[in-house]
Length: 252
Image (cartoon, helix red, strand yellow):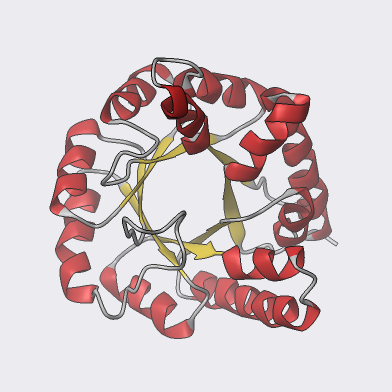
């Protein structure tokens, strides 16, 4: 049986980061989204942060209106962001932890500790027809709580695994990889759709693509960085090829 298609969501946040470094309109993240789709992306991911450090409200409005593939809005679980999502109606909303002082998302959402606050927000988004995912660590308690809250999707935070790989910490990387494998299997067994993202490059995306439970990878910073050297479309095509080669192993 052929392996199922593994979706690639391209995060265009850091195209906006470059634009915001000088102000003005260049480079345009919406143009980047169109190029990503032409190069093989299955959807576009954008994180509208509280401090608007990269993606802006206008970017989200334009993305929803102008791109031909699903928009995945990454957002903190706040009343402000839920209101924006309900008004904009993206295909999906991925709830992530957010701190103003962080350089990037540092870990998974605490679905266990935040279950009281999360439940009505998840319900409101789902009632509006928005697919909800929770960006969590590959931790049993977090995954089970995500299922109990009624979130149909979890996105496994792969940052610790990718960081250990990049720094040559083999034992830590092996331990994190076991957590990811076991977490993906648990989530799938609970009826959740399983996504993954954070820190992935060509090699790690190829590796995780071999897990048949994973339905989607969301990748951004690496793609934008590589685009400086080889171009955005070429980078996405290479990532798509790496993922496809990894996914082919799932059928063996």
